[in-house]
Image (cartoon, rainbow, N blue to C red):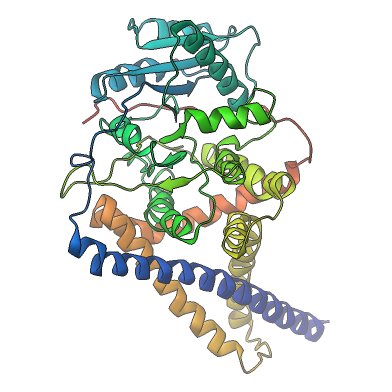
Length: 451
């Protein structure tokens, strides 16, 4: 029995290790391909475009040919803790002459309604329907869209673009100026999202800093360069009024899909199917300054982060596969594969941690698994690729947040892995095709001081 148990442990260690190692290798090579494309694109632009022309910044961006009104949509369910401060900060900071903020609320959320009404400003438009909350964020956005259309009809003029924000967002002062000019060339614009550093949650909330720095610092730029669809982040994005109107006419007057958990992600991909032009714009605010970006605090506890990641996995990996399928060319299919690999990635990561534990147990018991000849080179290759991944993580986070956060990003990878595994497990056991989701939101907080 002891011999049989030792053999079983050795076999299990070998098989699980090789499965995890092969999965990690495939995922790492996928990421390296993105890195190489990003470096090639960056080097090419520096050697060609930026040698001939100074890099455009929001401060040097030409004014729009035809300035227009910008409508900002904010869907708010149980956001009384943040919405008043968010609105006051936005009104004080936004450098644009013609905009209106539409805040969608619910009749059974009087605290949020009162917080919005406390900001007495003609640029704030409260939209409260008859349907009690929570519904979905998309349903709330559709009600705001209907209110905007009524206002346009009453005023006899249409707005130029619709910008989407959340109730906890810190809006960049030059954001609308940038949108006003660039929406004349594109149907959709996504700005970078750079999470605020939560000093009370360096490790949980901080892992969002790392992931968005890599995603919005590199991956979306590559996605745009390849001609693949640009998924919206749900904040810091602008959609041309005409483009959103075309989508609304094709969907019964409701441009935002109320049956989707990730209507923002799907909106960007659906726009491409309608022939729209999308752009990811990481433009410095001024020479030597950081980009025009949306900033916000992200979930600070394990439970809140797991809930949010579960919603993203459900909407993108599971429902996205069912609802959007596989369309487009090679680049588009590659990007959709990357979007939907989170569940498999969680399985591979879990197998890797189990393999480490089993290998340690084998070492303690003196059991030597029978490794194939190629196992050693495979593990060495994965170690080198891991070092590369950590280097990319460090340098990218350092670029946006400084070297201290860059150093923290390295061990935070372990925290991110455990959150991903827990969220993927929850998503796998809760996904039911065809169900209409409820608004599973998390509690938010707004910075006490906005600099």
